[in-house]
Image 1 (cartoon, one colour):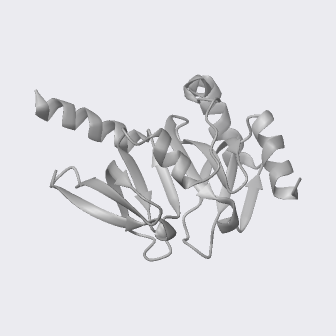
Image 2 (cartoon, one colour):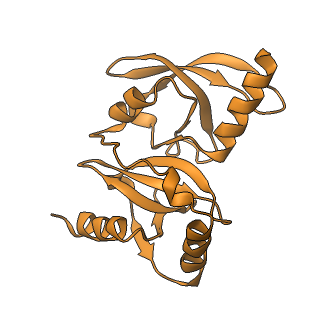
Length: 181
């Protein structure tokens, strides 16, 4: 077992917050509690700075440059998570080999797909229409203000991160369900 896997599994068992760094891809740090460690990807339960559950984040292990655990900020956020009983939202029965497994599991949900190697500021929200070995067809949704939609094909090789059930996506779902009424 690799040191990274061993370290993340220890954090997972103890429900520890970790900061994941991927400097070669983007400057953004991902804060969360590891809940799934696969051969190629890891799943994190993300939380806001105020301790609210903020969905799941899936990233390639090869993209990780650093993992940090401990410190006052992480301890404070963990205290807020525990106080607000947010750990009960985390599903522990999800298991994936790769990003395609993640897409298969959540293909009926609104998801966020990041292509950070191309541009760390771009992500796409939407539902997966179909996919093959090279591409994904996404019914892409625009921002709150535009509420535009389009079809978009993305290459698997460009995907660096997938997020589901985030607070932002929950807001989008609420707005979409309200506009359908």
